[in-house]
Amino acid sequence: MVTVRSGWVSWLALGLALIGLNLALSFHNLWPTLWVTTRYELSVEIALLVLILAALCGLGKPPSRRLLSGLALVLLVFVLGRYMEVTAPSLYGRRINLYWDAQHLPRVAAMLAEALPTWQVWLLSALLFLGLMLLYLVCRWLLQALVGAMAETGPRRFALVLSAMLVALYGAGYVGPQINTLRWFSLPVSLTYAQQLGFVRTALAGAATLDSNAHPLPGSSLDRLAGADMLVLFFESYGATTLDRPDFVHALDSPRSTLARAIELSDREVVSARVRSPTFGGASWLAHATFLSGIQVTENDRYEVLLTGERETLVHRFAQQGYRTVGFMPGLRQAWPEGSFYGYDQIYDASALRYPGPAFGWWRIPDQYALAQVNAMELTPGSRQPVLAVMNSITSHAPFQPVPPYQSNWQALLSPQPFGADTVAQATDGNGAVTAMADNYVRAIDYVLTSVAGYLGQRGPDELVLIVIGDHQPAAQVTGPDASWDVPVHVIARNPPLMDALRAQGFVTGLTPGSDNLGPMHTLAGRLLQAFDSTARGDATSKRTDRSSAAPG
Image (cartoon, one colour):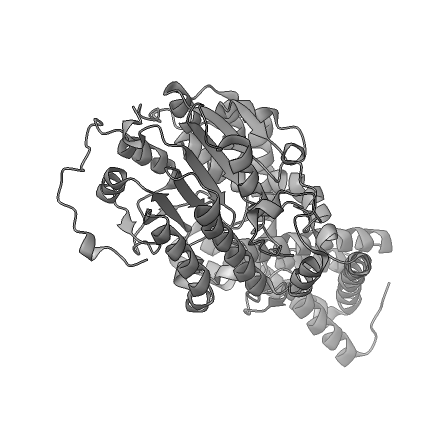
């Protein structure tokens, strides 16, 4: 036990200990980094800890070394909880849910291990371990210095009175909001952990429910499609930040222009809109389930409940009208029994796509290759059923690198050697570090837009209806603070009546949607089904449509 005998040294140790302990549970995130900063707030939990320790010292029962070590370990857990609480919203745009998010940590770790050189993986692991050890030792030293300082009467009485006053002020503000003292305090970490335990209890108890009054997706004759194939492309991390951040708009002007030209040269049109995604920065499956089911799915527990029920999805609506329904999941590398909920006739996972080329990061398969296989496996001309194909893109998934090279020869793309060695090396060398997320994000979005343009120009069936839906915004580290949850939706087709019906639903002509969204994503499937049916109630194609006021592409 540290015993401070000199008066001024005792007061100095007390001050350093109080400041250090308070900062440990009151820091904030320095957006958009992994670092932290201070906002001069107080921690009621540290005040309560100091009060208890001061009382024990005053009674002549100072904590033992073993107890101090245990308290340091508890304090470390609280520091990590505070770090997760303030960092997750900054990086991912949402709070963390330990129960659900922890289940994906092994996959995230494997993805990062694939994206980083081996020496960097070992270095980061060593730094993480050493950082935690150092943080524990700092917590232990602060507690030891505090108790040692309170061995003297003056510092102990000061700490006792100060901590008692702070606890009283917090309690007064808590029971009487009009007193307005809570604004001096940071959010208690114990409350964060209590909320996390609530998430666990809810998930284990199966208490989550879906909307009891959720209406089924409307029926649709799909007659306005006239038997055309449809491809729904969930564009990974394609968010409204690509439309709202001026630097992103400028950087993506060229691929957007390329896509616009491909649409025009193929005698197609495009209409666009925004919808509000149910998730932000990740958890793509929540957006996919929301769109296809027509039910808002914002949390994993709701997702689990949805999959255990029986609900007809957009896939079922197409199957009822004679469509063959297939799902293309190039990122799916394990069994996916829950896929049966959606009603696909067949699901193509990563192994079924038979990609022979070099791996590009954890996800391996370039989106351009997956698009080519959608066409080769299901959309070739011939006497067959019309097809609804749903594809989840993966190249633009975090960490947004390495970005594959674009192969202008789509026929070569399906050969045993899709890319030349020099092309692969050049593309890989051109990718930035994992930490350069914004630049990597722009490159990945550029690649997917270019791939879609090439597909429309060289491979896509003439009468294909292509729907491109952003599943969610990228992490807040890319979007910036206070970004919306909006994502773009584009419908590309050679079908004027359908385009008019979509304009009546709120879509605008071109690749640039308006600034307002159509509403939450779960309403989008119903809007589309109504537009696909010329006899649907509320069909507004007969209404006057002013195309001149639509946003340019």
